[in-house]
Length: 599
Image (cartoon, rainbow, N blue to C red):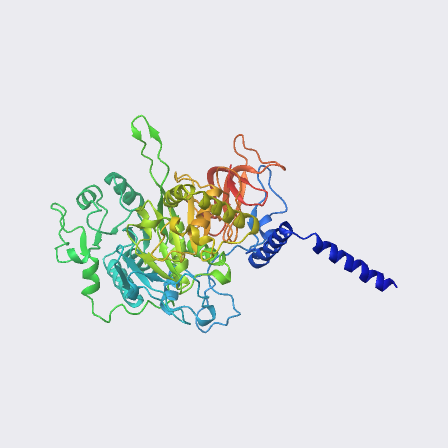
């Protein structure tokens, strides 16, 4: 009887339900099914576990009076040494043996050898592409080598083979050494010759001095030469005041002109009157082309070589406006050891998850000057990973990310804060002109912040924003990684977390925002690869330290460190820091997630 009663009640319930069914019931059920279907089909797991973002760095168990705990990357816990180098294993050495830290020479040897089969990175959605298709295609195969490209504009892309560049490194290095060069000032824009000069100094035991390009004041340029004690200059005609330099800087002994093909027929060996033969003048093309074809093909043997000399850079200091205009502040001169640089390169390689690391399928564009150590370190990391590198001499001066990437389709870009800020402002203005586009921007921002998922550029909803996105490269959607650096005390515009989030939506790329400083190779701290959160405040946080650095804040003036408050002067330590420790002279704070931010 109980079963019959149950079935009777069930029948009565079903009859009553459908007896009251109407149009509104149909609409409500349809809406419910639609909502459930949408959530089931669009639900995605976050790119990283939220717990990893809640505590991005580990603080030391104890702290000194007047200082905060020392914070390290979770990948470099306290009690273990910070990452000192590249773990280079020479041929024949067991893979279980500890590798060498390496130096700049090992980076170019890796470029020549190609990426080992066991380390070939997966092919990313952003492959190498350009309007000059035949010149910029790439094959991601085991043992493949990256390519060195030069972009001259919207249509012209030229390639320099690895073997030819190796020959230039050897011939230029040997020429400078034969002429008594010891301290080489490189005064060039981003170019093949810039990188070749740097590696030539490394292989032939000379100090490389990286001078900020296109100085407007000749006296500033002469001052940098004098302070760095340069005896050799590699530069291009039209930007270097030869007459002024040789008259005011008698220590100059050697000058190498890098001339273009249209000017190669001119006589560049002339020395100004009154100088006699104290300055040996030659051209890059003469040194390379006059040598036998077989000369310089092989790199010097690593056996018995001494450690390479330092790399000297100049850090631009912020200019202050006074009654007589902009005050002249001399740039800070910093000498980085090869150990500082390779430690920073290794840290940048380690900061990228294995599934997203650089590889032969990437096209890397330094759209910031290579005289900036952060840009140089990332470029060296791309070379070591056998990614293809494209160089554009005018990209660092471009005020817009679209102009900097014209004619190519990079997958990884290092850009200036000013360029990305301008691009953001222009794109945001276009988006806000449309109510629907503004709603889409808000929805994708919530997807980033709340769900921890990077919106796909190929998603149906994202395509409604395509006509408003910035034209980054010739193939929109190929860019997958954008690096931006705040240069402490250099007067660069600091970015907010909202700007960084919008850039992720506009470009479809992950954005890495770093804090850089004069005495730190690479980055002092940078945002985690999968951190898409939007935090309140005027300035975006810089994230956690890399495996080559650790940071703390120290009491200074009214900013006191206490148990419940971590704010003070930022101090960076580690093998990537000149002298192992550097106080940045700026006030910062440690956030609740143990990341570093401006105060």
